[in-house]
Amino acid sequence: MSANEVDLTVFPDECDAFGHLNQASFLSLFERARWTMLERGPGMDVFTRNDAWPAVRKTTVEYHASALPGDVLRFQQALTYHGRTSFTMRQVARRVRDDALVASAEFVFVTIDRDGRALPVPAEVSRFMLELSKPGEGLQRMPVNGVSLAVDLQGSGPAVVFLHGYALDHSMWRHQMANLAGYRRIAADLRGMGHSDAPDLGYSMATYADDVIALLDQLGVKQAVLVGLSMGGYVAFEVVRRFRHRVRGLVLMDTRADPDTVEVRRQRDVNSVTARDGGSAAIAEHLLPRLLGRTTLATAPQTVERVRALMAKTSMAGIIGALGAMRDRPDSTPLLAALGDIPTLVVAGAEDQISPPAQMEAMAATIPGATFRVIADAGHLPPVEQPLATTRLLAEFLDRLQHDA
Ligand code: MLT
Image (cartoon, rainbow, N blue to C red; front, side, top):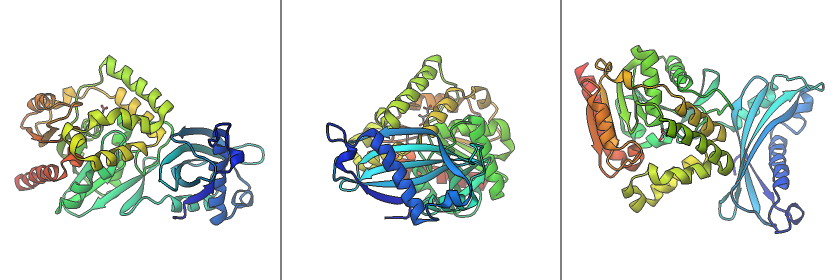
């Protein structure tokens, strides 16, 4: 068990008439887990010692499965946002005996003084929580544009930035990050997703693009090849629109340049409601059959589970923020004809239902000099469904770019 995990047993007096852990008791257990973590860390008196108190401003809880008396629940805590006077914690509870996800929650806190005035979060508390929430193996945290992004950095050479799709994270590029030797590979979790901060508000394509550029500035990268998949492609278009001189080449994978139709915009709002009601797990269930190709769905259960798990752990703020950002994104079709000076590769999964190959080919045809390629046996996520074929295609494009430079 790691330092951010706390095990608590469910007692009969916390359960309802049906014997299930009651939702109000759940809130107490979430709170107990937080205090236990503080007790083991800087001490339960850390707030009083600093003359500040954490007041809950907002709570979002999703219940996924029941818990019964005697069940041991493992509560895992992570900091997802740290502002000056506020912070957000994501907590998940899993049943220890079968690792089932029982509930997940987000708590927004404001630190206040005795008179209820907002105060900066005490430095001692910040240090403890930031330490607890260090991103996973090999990831770095980089403060950019008012948030902290989790970034995977590999290798050296000409820079390549990987931009993941909706409700996913940097790990969808695992094979490409591990194998594209000779390049400086940069894969960040977009704000609201993966291990990056997930502020409540402030999501737009312009903000995601600003984050990418602030990240490149931090890393001292003047120009990079952008590889954007689906929503990552929308971000790539926005970077081209506003920071064209920073783009050395472009890979547009299973994405589109045209904006949402009225019907799709309406569907984004319906999806926000689905997410609020059913949690990120409901979004995963809804999307998976269209996201993955028929070959993956029929023959690669581990890949299906990997993508489902990845989506199900995306924060609610990140999902709702991304839905709004996609709904309101500008039309990028006017950019296409003017991309002649940026070497561009357009890639489609042969079985993609969301951005079908014919549509991707038509987009490629309007970009002067663009190359169009199809990856067999892949749906909307070729880097995950056919990692080797995707890496080979990217290596070929990147090497050609180097050769022609
Ligand atoms: C994605 O994979 O990022 C989404 O399919 C993009 C979208 O919903 O437009």
